[in-house]
Image (cartoon, rainbow, N blue to C red; front, side, top):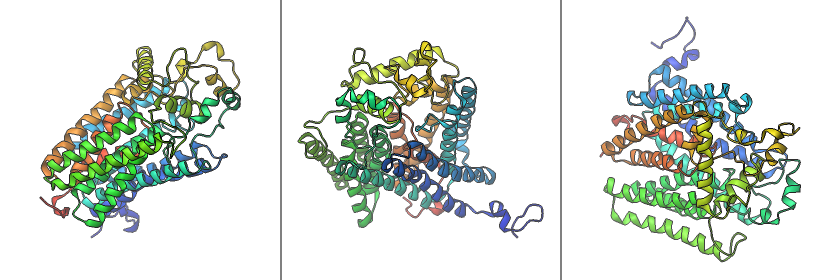
Length: 487
């Protein structure tokens, strides 16, 4: 007989009567939402000058609330594996400490909702927690297969939009519209308008796109290697070639490193799963696609350059923070060589470490890295974005998520983040050694790839929902009876 509470109907007590299989089906939709809602909600901002990128946060809210409900169901129904207790508690501690950081930060609204058009405040961290719990709670193979397909699908959607960006100037990411003084500043530097041709897809930044496609490329290559289906193999290898081609067009270090990681991960999966060695040909195909993109970009066939070089410094500082969302001042050429990728990353890291020394316990507040860099004598400005523009060489993101976490939410939050990622890594490694199937191998390398990319990238609403869902999937205890491909 079905369970009920307080003599209510069975339909109103669907949570009590929900089976693991029913939960897995619902969780599949939640994980697909984590992959697609943000890019879909970014389309209006890409196409309409009247819509800002804050609209994309609505997509995160929709998928986040859906997975919040699913996470609560998983906790009520006790679907969570005991092995996940440590990272689960660490994630909860990181979330709670973010509240402490918010109380001690500069702006409670920014802490809660995130910096305008970034959208990574405490609510976003809560949603990431829910993505993690939802994926970690499934026990059906089909649900995680859906997540893998969703990651590949999100990569295809972003890649298609990125290629469209190179075919028309009507759909392009960097619109100069956010500040009353921005047009005046840009008129003084024609160089800014010339260099803004780089693929960003629906990820809002070329670097964020490269981070997302690292996961998509890894999933596609491993999918090709592990699949016994001809149709799926073709789908995966074609997708992989598209991803590697697009990643080169981001002109970023993350894109190059992401391709290298995905190829290494796929090569390792051949030996881990004892797959046919002929599957290694997929790695050559992905590499050839990347080389083709370099040649086409270097010869001016695509893009607006006559050579190929990494433009991380300009893209992350001027094109993204300064021009796109008015979140930082422009760089000072007397202090920083924007053309030198190593110099840019080293400068950001050094300055962030100094901020950590000033705010070691609670940080500056979530999403508030730029605040302590503003000069006190300019505090009388009537417009906050004008105040930021009057402070050159300020930045709102450091492209090392571990440093960024310590700087904005304190060293305790960094320790909690490591306490999440490290156990998840070892749990995923154990699952992979035991099962050696597509799901365990793919989820392990997606988690590893995301954790490594965080060394030269930062959390963002385009990448992080996918990463945390994959990290949760790496911990999922798939029931052997539900697995169709036992080894």
